[in-house]
Length: 281
Image 1: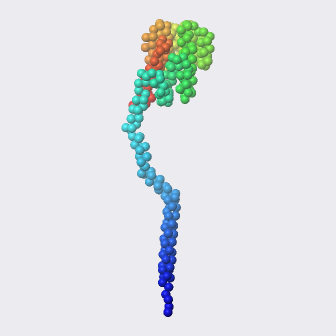
Image 2: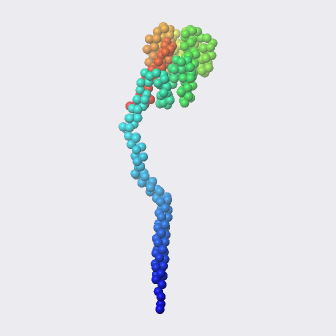
Image 3: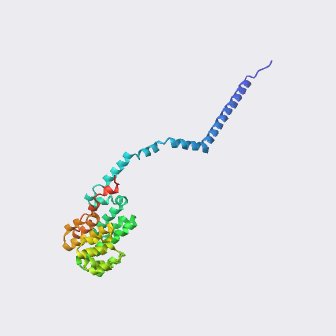
């Protein structure tokens, strides 16, 4: 009698199933490897870049939207609002905006800081301009020029050695002749003022009481500077601050006003600051 082992067919079926499963898993793994290689290929990366270029991301779309003209106008309005009314603020209020003031419009900031330095008789008020070495040094030199030379010599009506020495410390070469010519009104000294047509012509105009002599240089900027100097010295001679109204440049007018009024509000120099700092349209 032959006995049939019923377990053998079952084992055979299990083995076949395992082999098939292994084959499927192997094929699946190979497809993954192939796919990974395909994704990392330079050609596909280039294609992805081209797609990215043609279809901007949400972030890029957002950045592009932020550059629309209406938003640029909004930025300018924010700028105008930030700087608006500086001329009516206190020194402490302006100080909060000081860094932005220097960065946005260093020319006007330099005039303001110089005014404060002269008013407070302290050169530290030039310090915010250190980010611009040229304007910083200019502020320091002009502080000495007005606080240590022009104002004290005019009040004393003489050219003391200390005034001359202070002048020379700024690198000026016409210290004694300009002091004697403009302050002491020694007209002969005007011819000794060299390489400075503004001072030379102002010296002649002041001594002859004729502002038209400022036009001798033929340079508009030099003529204006000469006229401003003439009107300042004229106001001092007459002891009449109202004559300073002839000075049209607010930056110099503020300094001239300090001679008569030590409490003059330097913030007036910042009139129109927002218009200049935020651009013109």
